Structure formats: structure tokens, C-alpha cells
Image (cartoon, rainbow, N blue to C red):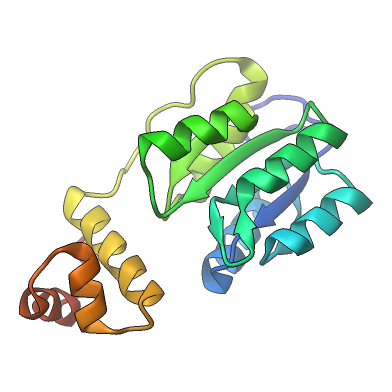
Length: 184
């Protein structure tokens, strides 16, 4: 089967692990539209079961989940299918977790929210050995900041005071940011 980059790829099975239902659904549909056969799961235990039943050729895994980390799934998948190409996604991008993901066997590390084209480019770049091209239309710095604030706000169960404390920002400043529309 030819993919969007013109490469021949026989097995397009993909495991998508993310605890954010909306993101997982959107990304899953986008990857299926690009020719992948996705299995979508929301926790580490479901992912480990899916890997044991049918180890996929590709995996897109969230780093932090309620019942563990995506690194557990990387280890399990590498043990069963060493040729699998794995991408780690996270809303908590930092150098230490990126290094841990690559050492565990991930081929790339992307920050959320990741565009489906960026994910596909990262998955398929491992096959060619070339780094993925830079995104055509990257998010602005304001949008990345806004997305990060929204993610922390969600994790704090929409508690403004707790979110402001964790972001080391004044509560009223946070309230003003939350009341505005997302930047482009």
C-alpha cells in the first residue's frame, strides 16, 4: 500500500493511547483517513492488552496517564515487536521525559496538541532515516501558551485557584486569560 509520502508500507496497524477522549477520537479519525488501521485505548492496562493480542507496527502513546506512563507500553511493545515505530505525545514537554522516551525506544517525541500530519511525518520519517520536515503552519507561541494553560486547568478540575498556583500566576490574570478566546 502506498502512503501519502509515496513509501511502501505493508502493515499500517497503529495503537493510539491517550486518556483525553476528544483528542484520541480526533487524532484516530485523522490517522485512519491517512491509511492507518487504529486501535484506540484510554489507559495503560488496555494498551498492554492490545499489544499482547496484536502488536501494532506503529504506536502513538501519551506519556502521562492515570494508571501509569506510556513508557510501560513502549517496553512491552519493544519486547514483542522490536521493529515497531513509536511516537510519544505529551502535554508536559521537557527534556528529561523526551530523553527517557527515546531511550525506551520511541523514535520521536511530540508535544500536545500534535497535528495529525506531524504525527504521520514523525512515524514515517523513522522508515526513511530522515528527520521529519518542520510543520508548514506551526502554532504561535501565544497559542502554545494558551493550550498549556487549558491543559493544566483541565487537570485541576477547572479550579482556577489551584491552576493559578500550579502555573505560578496570579488568579485574576488567569481568569482574564480563561475568559478570552484562543489565540490563532
